[in-house]
Image 1 (cartoon, rainbow, N blue to C red):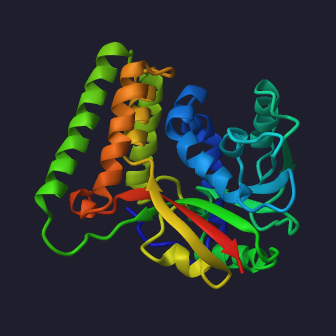
Image 2 (image 1 turned 30 degrees about the horizontal axis):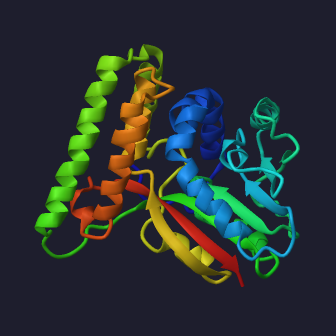
Amino acid sequence: MRTKRIIESDFNTDEAERIWWNTNAGIIEKIWAQGIDMQHIIRLPYLKKLKTFILKNATSSPVKVLEIGCGSGWVCRLVADENFHVIGTDFSEGQLAIANNMAKQFNKEKYCTYELADASSFKKEVDGVVIHALLHHLSANELSKFFEQFAQLKTGTKVFVYEPLFFSRQDGKTSLTDKLLNISVKTIRTLSFKLASITGKKNAALTDAMNKINSDAEQNGWYISPKEIPFVPNELENYFSPHCTLQNKYIVNKTDLDIAQNLTMNGIDKPRFMFSGILIPLACWFDKLSFKGKFTHFLNPHQHLFVCFEWIKK
């Protein structure tokens, strides 16, 4: 399994990535973005924090927010309104067509517009920028080009980033509290999986598709897709820190995402209160408590977690 970033991507690798996404986009959308009900449970909490961050001390209304690599547009569409206008860009015409249709479906077309553009195309006169799980798909050279353009953003622009990071094992012994929290998280996760298998119906087609994705990755030495690699500790900060001042950093979507994806695999798109009101909130609460201790002792080698960053352009 590849764990180091590609320095310079070649034609064959880029083509493999393009084919991979053309083949698997629908599957990844289902298991990753998921349905609107699940989005409200596991995505909306940190997206509301995103919105609060960008709106704080805003000097104009509505604020204009650029979402780079927006895909089907679900991220910012969840929080777009009369005060929060979104310009989504993506290199995929198919994804933008979905984004436009979904904006109309949820009555957000007044607040969401979409344009065809690659990841290095920046609109300088925006109040905020959202980069959601995009950068880890780029090679080192592509990241360098990305940040050459990024540097042209105006001073004071708010930048929200959500990316997967590998976590290194923390030194020292774990406390009894750390161990109890880990047991609690594992128990909630196991119970949720069992209840999902009992109350749901396994989506065999989706399961087979995900098994093939994982099998292809293992055979080819990929992490998941041909190019993507989570960031190692401090790697992402090293790219941003010359251009931005870090305001906040926090982990999201650990156990709750595991549970949500398992529900989806079991055909449960609208979770019952047992999941939405009890088990997932409990999982999030115990996760947050565990992050205060030596939680990385209990992670698998090369396991990534999703981290949110709030930056202000210098």
